[in-house]
Amino acid sequence: MITGKTKLLGVIGYPVEHSLSPLMHNAAIQAINDQQPQQNLIDYIYLPFSIKPEDLNTAIAGFSAIGVQGFNITIPHKQTIIPLLSEVSDIAQAVGAVNTVYKTNKGWAGTNTDVTGFLAPLQTYNWDWHQKVALILGNGGASRAVVAGCAQLGFAEIHVIGRSMEKLAAFQQSWLNSPLPINLVVHKWEELSSLISQVDLLVNTTPIGMYPKIQESPVDENMFDKLSSAAIVYDLIYVPRPTKFLRQAQMRGAIAIDGLEMLVQQGAAALELWLQQFVPVDVMRYSLLNTPPASNPRL
Ligand code: NAP
Image 1: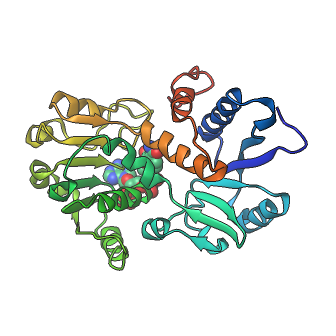
Image 2 (image 1 turned 135 degrees about the vertical axis):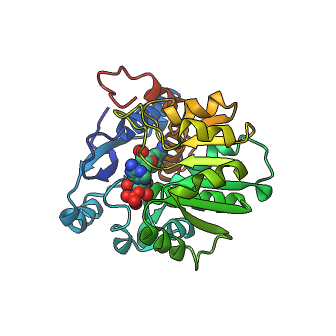
């Protein structure tokens, strides 16, 4: 129920229509209130805001003026928001992108909960990560959160594969002054076949295999023969579940993790930051899994 005191949360992006965040966050807010006596209800709503790049400064000044409490950020504002913030967390600085903004008495502060989201399913495995080798396919925005997450876990080696040597060199360079301990090597796709046999964690951060191109996979079928059956294979894509890439990994006997849990956990970490209380992660996950396809074409 919206009242005269309802506080605003939201997500900014362009486009933003596809975002599943309003569904997930409003379900959590409602579930929290379902458990509360009338006098303890929290009075929040989470809305999508479609903001063109050229309107970002005006929109953020407007958010301050109307008392928005916090917001998520999606493409294309994850980097361009940074100069508008009075504080940026170490992890967001290491990633070079902000996906969550909250209020402090000095102004807006930014952090990055994609790293927390990425790590959540991996932390259910009691592995000694310091002995392990990670191979990350793709060198875009999500790859940066994955590299930071692998560095936090303490991976012995982190390898990143991309298709442009120029972009790969810039990617590697950007980690040189990182506060995170990191042993990063970049490679072209041609090197995948020689690397794949050594890896303990293989992560797809490219959109290859995402709906509607569900017949595609970033890795050829026969290359999976070289992968250790003890490896973890992780696809950041959450539509479809599983992707062809993960089905191939499962056939090899590897552990497969899809991108849904990362999506849920990055959202839960943001909501916890805004509300300063425990949030119902199960409800957030359930809201995405159980929304009829007509209103939720992405799952
Ligand atoms: P991005 O910044 O555009 O990066 C995409 C990367 O994939 C780039 O390195 C790009 O290479 C590479 N790539 C794209 N098409 C390729 C192809 N055909 N062959 C080889 N490489 C290709 O996108 P992003 O924001 O990182 O997102 C990547 C994926 O992660 C998307 O599917 C997104 O939905 C998913 N994601 C999931 C979550 C989650 O919570 N589960 C969070 C974030 C992202 P170039 O640089 O050479 O173009």
